[in-house]
Image (cartoon, rainbow, N blue to C red; front, side, top):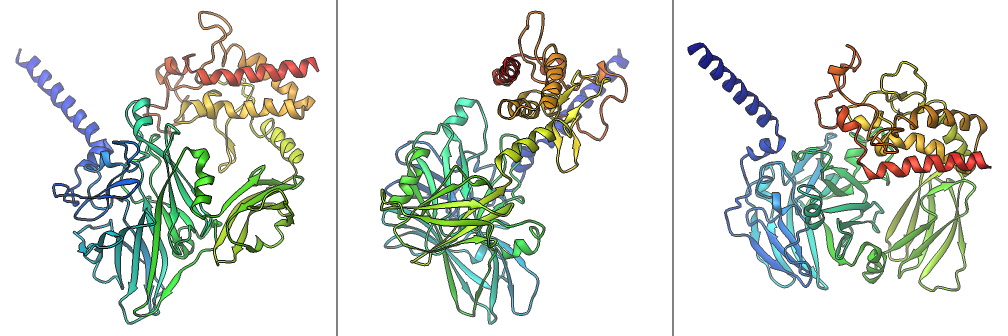
Length: 561
């Protein structure tokens, strides 16, 4: 009896240790364990504009919530996670990041209002100023700048403004300045709950014409637009990798609007081609620089261009888009209430530009474009008021060459022929890792190596759809073998209760059913996405069926023709 109690106790201790270990691995719990530095128990600063209810944390004057008056209770920011996200290093709307160097120093030094918080010094608010603060207490004493932040209204619109002043006796070069754009893209709960409270946001990194659109998951009004106020170009868009909010498939992370980015291009981004020419600013002793962002409500996403025009912002529309095959004569339409003084291709000669006389519209200016040099390029547009706009393009080969190259790559480099494949994926067009230059035959996300779902089916679906445009006899013959041997009977059930049903994945993780050595030891399969056999075999995912339907349709059309 004593022996049994001993083993029972031992088992319970083991179970408790296991639970504690799992608990300790919960990244959100690690976040909860961080000491709160925002003094959330204090009285918040509640402000109001014609469109918004703005709630600021009193100790930091960063945003606790930003609610449109038209949707009671809806918050564009992750206010529902404010308590757990109240430690040092967690960004909030209203923070600022900088990299500076002084005198003859060649080293950039980083400063952030979020790194080690201390209560900011409130400044008097009057007139159009809703709230103001000297941020000196939350920065190290060796920062060579004073930074004052103001929440204001201008023409009824909410504005976030920063004043940076050089308080040292040497010139200060600011090599990066970023404004964290913290909106509620932390998805959670049910689909209905996510639709009700969450947003997605997308940038247009277009310098003085740039903006960020914050769209509700429902797609309904109102959409929030973050626009430049004053001279605040949208030069770069930087992921805030140092924010400890746990990233996952339901949260991709936060980003910041960068008005200058030279310090990043010299270091982290030195091997990348930036979207815009990197810049820095130099402040002489006593000199000041002002940056600002404006928050504007629009209607549904389709109304964004109209809202931009109403607020006298430049609007650009590219037709058919911003990928330019060399054999396509594209169009660019510009709408701004100032004259275009010049349009330049960057690099020179990459895109030819021809003005078209558009007599049907006084407000839209019409240009014909043609790609000349393959690769990433841009147009730099200068207006008579000094505003500069960039529009990013990629010039590619003529369309027919791209389609032929695509079909050839899929049916050669991505053609998977392995008769002994345990998962019945041969022959097929399988996923491909273009960095490693090899096929993806095993992956922690089962579907990617499993020829179904979105990523797994994409390659063979692309190869088949190519045959509906430019059929190739050799490629069609390979794909006939794929549909006869792999699609029918494996990806798609050919018999039984699930006949005609489509599996979620042919690849699965079930080591107990497989010979020793089946699975690569350098891949972490201890995750939900490494589906076991019963999950991978499910025929219940509806969006897998159009892939298979399209494959049969193309093959039947080619057979008929």
